[in-house]
Length: 212
Image (cartoon, rainbow, N blue to C red):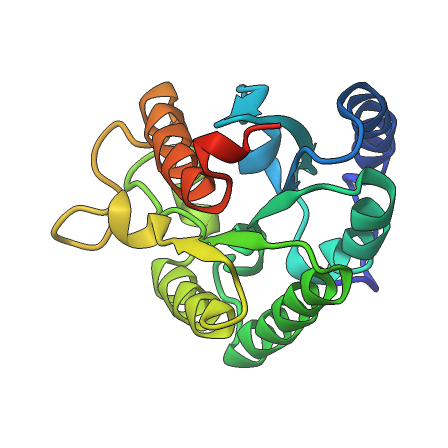
C-alpha cells in the first residue's frame, strides 16, 4: 500500500497539527485514542477521569499507523491508550496475504505500547452495515477475519479489549440497522455506546479513588 500515492497525506498533516495542540492542552497523563476515521470522529473530550487526546487519522491503515505510534506515545506521555485500526485493511478484494501483513503491523503496534509501558485497550473495527454508501468498498469476511486476528494478538498483551465487531452486529453478522452513517462510520447512537464501553474499560484501569 505504501507504493501507491497517498490521497490522505495533506489531511494527515493537518491532523498532526491538531493533535499537537491537543497534546499541549492535555499534558502528560491523559488518554491517547489512536486510530483511523472512526477515532477521528469520536467527539468526547473525556473518558472516565481522563482527558482525551484524539489521534485519529481518516483513511489510515495499520502499516501507515505503525510508525506514528511510538512518536505519539513519546510526545503525549499518556497514562492509558486506546487503539482502533484495521477497517481500511479489510477493503473489497483484499487477499489473505494482505490480512497477514495487517496483522503483523498490528502486532508491532501492540509492541510499541509494551515498550512504552502504556496500558492499551484494543478495539476491533465495527461490522459493516448493508446497503449504504460505502458498504461495497469493504469485505465483511475480511473484516471478521482481521478482527479475530486482532483479538488473538491483544490477548494477554492489552490491558483490555472491546469487540465492536460482535457488539454492534445483528444475527447475520452485519451491523444492526442504524449503527453506521454510511456502512462503516459510526452513527451518533453507536458513538454513545462506544463511549459507554470505554468508560467501563477505563474505570477498571483507573479506579475513582485514583482520579488525579
